[in-house]
Structure formats: structure tokens, C-alpha cells
Image (cartoon, rainbow over all chains, first blue to last red; front, side, top):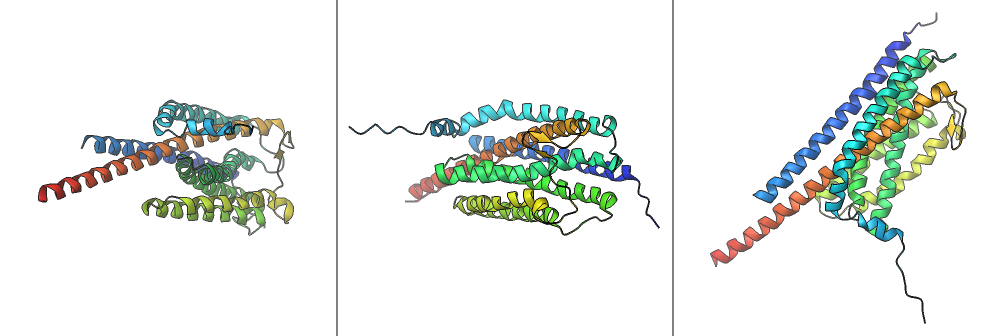
Length: 46
Length: 261
């Protein structure tokens, strides 16, 4: 018997991983950058 | 009379960007520009691929995974090439920002390699009837992910040990041997994976699929560039903060020793 798969389910899952993962990576990198630059400023002041 | 030795022209240009303050000034406007333009182009390309581009006659709607999977594969391999080139520059010319650039490219490179493997698996299930097959292309891509893990561990260890990142740089260069293996794997060995559809100057892909794919690849590449610059700024700021704190601690200890005497 031939298995019937809904192709859209796979397409949406791939897009969710690509878009969601990229958004998380961008946000994480920006937060890491801000945090590190704040630490540098504090080390300058203290 | 012997000719006066003149430095190679590329070296002064390259070392012009070795000044961290100059790099930060450049990255301050270039990073948001790359991120914003990349997000806009990638979003438009993905919408184009999802809603406008046609379905494939053979593969049906699942062909739309192409617009995520191919840019992810390109950036997974491109990320390692960036590590290899930066490592070479670090080892040969001792450029102070090259090691930082290599470390900054490793995380996004590894992330896109993971995306490539997962989206490939999601494409393989309806297309081949299998989530995974141990063929040359898939296996060499998995090896690339393990190389990224190894590089990240080495780079972290060498930064903690304050011993420079020469070992990580050598690993980055040697690991580049896997890139042609990935590229030619579909030609060298029998594979379920299709051979390359796009090579320099020609494409076997219909324009309806090719243009949104090129747009998505450009968009994600710009995002990748923006993330690398953000991570470079983060690593640089951490290095500067640590050096400053160490200097203060040393001066404080010196002053303490004088006051005790």
C-alpha cells in the first residue's frame, strides 16, 4: 500500500526551522554583542 | 644597486583593518545594514518561494524546501571556507582580527549546517521515503558538523588558555579538505542526492525556481555576514574587557605590595 504524506507539513516544518532558527541566532548574537560591550564599558569605568 | 624591497600591496590594505577601533567604526554601520537588508531580501525570497513559485512536476510542493535547504548548505560550507581563509591569514600574516573572524564564523556556520541536515531530512522523507541515508553527500555534511564542534571546542580552549589560537587555526585549515569532498560526493559515489544543478556560469534549473533561490541565498548570506560582524564585536569587547581587568588587577597588586612594604 502506498503511503500518503501531506507535503505541506514538511514544507512548513522546514520553513519554521529556517526562519525561527535564524531569528534566534540573530537575537542571540546581538544580545551577546551588547552584553560584551557593556562589560567593556564597565571595565573602563570601574 | 639592489632594488629597494617594497611590501606586497595587499598587506597594507589588509593591515589597515587590523586596528580594532577602525574595525568597530566600520562594523557599527555595516552590521545593521547587512542584517536589515538580509532579512528583507530573505523574507521576500521565502514568500516568493512559498506562495508564487510553481510546484515541481515530479516532486510537487516539497520542492519549496529548496529555498531554505540550499542557502543553508551553501552557508554551512561557506562558513568553513571563511574559517579556513581567516585561519590562513592569521597563521601567515598574523592579522590580529583574523582569529576573531574565524571564531565568529564558526557558530553561524554550524547553525546553518544543522539547518541543512534537518531540512534535507524533511525533504528526504517525502522524496526518497527515508529520513536519512548514509550516502556520500549526507555523511560528508554530517562530518562537517562534527568538524565545527571540534573547531568550537578548540577555539574556546585556546582562548581560555591564553595560548593564542594557532591550534584552532591549523584545524580550520586542515578541515577545509572536507569541502571539495562534500561538493564532489554526488559525482564520486552513487547517491540518492541529485548532482549539482548550478555551477559557475550555467544552471540546469528553470528560472521559476532559480531566481527565488538566488534571492534567498543572497538574503541569508547577508544575514550571515551581519551575525559574523556582531559576534566579532562581542569577542573583541570581551578580549578588551578581560585585558583591562587583568591590567587593573596587576596594578592593584603592585600598589598593594608597595603599601605593605
